[in-house]
Length: 202
Length: 202
Image (cartoon, rainbow over all chains, first blue to last red; front, top):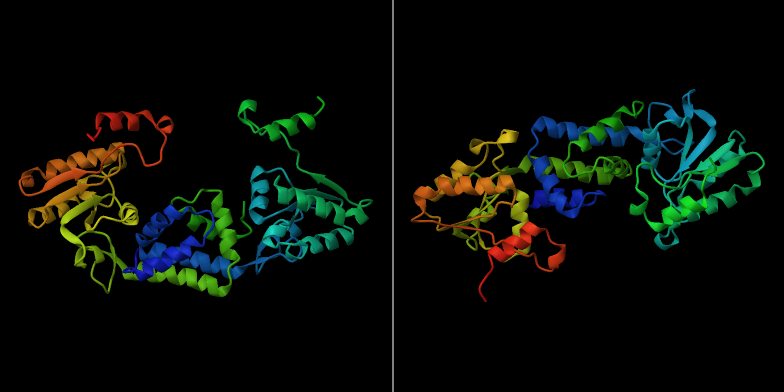
């Protein structure tokens, strides 16, 4: 459609590869970027380049850290290293951090088991997690994967893999139930069912 | 929250300025970009820079064109220059092009009148439109603004501004009614009401 605008078309193709940007909004974002001043554009491209260049994965917990610095979650004395929250992704880690209150360490798997997509245990940071538990300093693992088929399967797999260390490490998962502020009659029946089945004594 | 990741924070701040990217998805897009190979990253930043550098607004119709080329919509012999479709934005132009079938020219206003946001006629390409009509080659103006309060107000304003040239130029607007494939009972009452009031003889 925009053959007469090859460079704009290139930009649109690049934007189309970004996740979570609806295909019709790609045109709006491209238009927005074209309207930037040279200064604004420099800030955008520099931010992309600098972040890409200086951010690496921590070799212990696989969260992002800056190349020149130690990993915040592994090295800050304030974070308890004996509790490890296992999450699927960095953005799930961010969600838990936004909630506040959790002061332990993390382990970012980098995804979930998904045979249909060809993602097996060797594609995730599961071996490093087992190694971390085996080395002995971890007292509790919170398996905070999402409640999807793949997330639940990953919880089951990790639980089995950690079976040999159950005498030294406690395993737990996130509580399931009614979200704060949700009216019962607006929720799906699976959530309501689980909230009743896993009810808490008062 | 990510004070220990200043460069990643910078990237997130830049992404937050892009429109139509939900605030929670900003973290996912940042994570996606950090996972790029050096090659992929170069393609992204180059596309942004090249598009920004080489794309300018046409001085006639205010659509995007490449600096080195003539404006496709103004200069292609295939596009009839005596019919001008007036749109709010470049992405509305793209929507009409995607629909196919329209072979006239365009005029991109660059927004709509919105006194509350401080956007007046002088902030839009309304004077150039009047000039274009006054110069005499335009036989029809399709006012294709959106059906918002501001869009309708802009149609009214442009209609009044073009009043002196009504003997040489026809004005029209897009037809309003039931969208293709929409069941009546799922539509808002304004749309159904308009479709009845502006019914078409068979």
